[in-house]
Length: 344
Image (cartoon, rainbow, N blue to C red; front, side, top):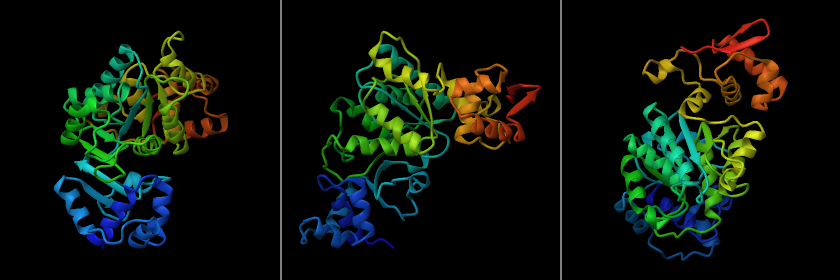
């Protein structure tokens, strides 16, 4: 059982400047919180019980990885947060979850698409994860709130340090209606390295990652990399070839990521049928990430193996295995050399 003494030193370590996720995990798993704090040069006379009390008074739940309340999908991650901080209802972190990310410097059209996706997916019973940044992230969360849903926000600062400041009202609403997550204690200001670290949590929570607008390089592409590392399906909203904000998303589609035209494309990729969206559970097992990519490749029409290979970018051996599994579980029917998705 974790004591307040133990927890307090873990909070202090997680809040140290330059304390990255890997080093924090090593310190907690090795010497432990108190000795790790001393090894990191921390004040050995600090009142750790007061540190814990301050977080509780602020409504911040603090969890180590062995805490029963720690979200299972993060506990099983490649690089789980060693200390997780939360404000709000952790119960909203349940399948299915879609992460919607994109550039801070996008277009009004891109923000509108992100907001619509956030709203429409929420109305279909899908949870939305994003990073509360300006631009696409914030628009997606506003769409969730439009539908009176429970957004999941992952931030790169203390949960009392609103960043960006322009999102103060949005930050408050996300914490009140959904949940805010971070991996540092109260009062910690954002630092550039914390945002790539945050992106791995966004990818780890999501079943599918949707990129709405992204430049060729940037934070969204880092989140894409983290999603691929975790075998999550990445989808992208196509944009004008004359718009630099769509250079990254168009490149993802060119490389085989399924395109997103509306929420239906994402729901199909999640393996959610029309019956489920109407409230009736589909008895078929949820497809694997690769199988979801194959389903998204049908694009509403019968397809051959070769067509699906081109559309999805899935290697032929993996594609054939995925199709056999989809046939066996009733997601796909085959007539001669043609495959067709079965909707219920």
